[in-house]
Length: 516
Image (cartoon, rainbow, N blue to C red; front, top):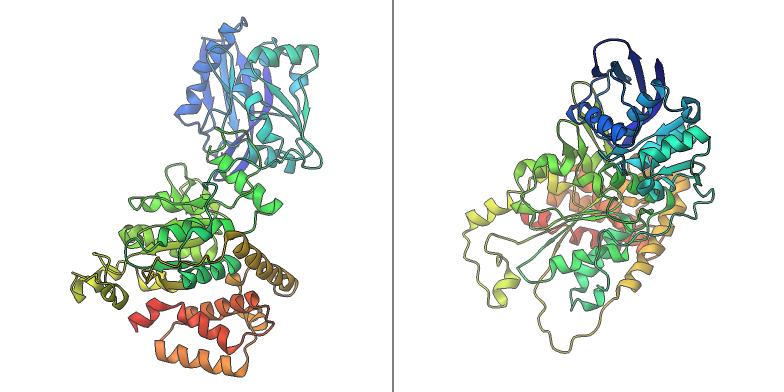
């Protein structure tokens, strides 16, 4: 007897519907799974056989063929277990297949018949809705995650026997996803520690201003300074001044973390905070951009719509740093394999920190404070050369963080809430221009949109031209200064880019001044 049911898989960060066909014929007892299954899928028949028997049902002692279509797509994971078990029971006449028609079935089976949660439920359910499949049979532990997709009829089950009983009586347990999105409650913080504020940072007003500018326009930023000057402390407070994710952005980020299996340990809800990823400097190139035999999201994708923080930037391998160049420009990663091409979103803001040299005390400011640098000029140049020119050219703000001259009589500076208000005011100005430019953030402006949005006063235009010649900037560096000046003008509530805005933008390119 033949039965066809519907399941799903995750390819990259997108869901893909998979047809599960089960055919039982007379012959020697044999189970064969076809359709490019990987070992975890082949092993599913052992789990299915034990679960069916342990639940009191009969596992057919006949020839069983399971086809996973489309057959040219590589299948991996355990999400097919429940669909395969349902197909075997339906094809052997132990389950009413009509009750499962037009229903997406996903879930992993334990040997006892218990249904375990699986990763990637959110992109699977979203893909099902896009293709008109509005009923989902899934593990009860995944129902909160699936309920984030509106308009779906969810059938949560804890045990294989629950599914069989519900199919027999025609009354599966039902939970409707809220039509108004009210189930999308904020999740607990996945990225940031609470209670940290910029008011705790003594001095460093220049660095705070640079971070405010970076957050307002989504510009990449690099902080350079001696050890202990507060570079890491400053950047770790950066998410607090950025606005929360929009509904569309929150769903995109949550879908990525669902596909990566990072929602399993918490009550599923939309991620409202912007991601903050801080990988160790020993990370590989594949760990940063994604990869593997079956490509998985890398750190640049996990930082989508958020911040990727690379502490001690020169300590990362040259290969790992160079692979960032394309995602920084294209806001995405494409990984090609023999049988498929995977696309991963990577619209992130790069924040990095570094010491000026290997010992950490190169520079006039450090020497004035009594700290002498033990590195030769050759060693300093070699240390800074670990960061290539093309990568550095993609970092809009390169800011020195000096030691505070004194910790006495410290006056409180900007707080996180004050900086957030200023950043959000600048964001509103950018969004108001988006109807004309089609671009939401200043860092993404280009071509005619940049020329229209960043109209320069004559004095500002002359200064930018002089800086372009004197520093030997690339065309990319020229445009990035212009974008940065546009953001500074937004922070100052100015329609035109004035001389002082360009001057401030130029002073944030300290590495250009040192290299030229």
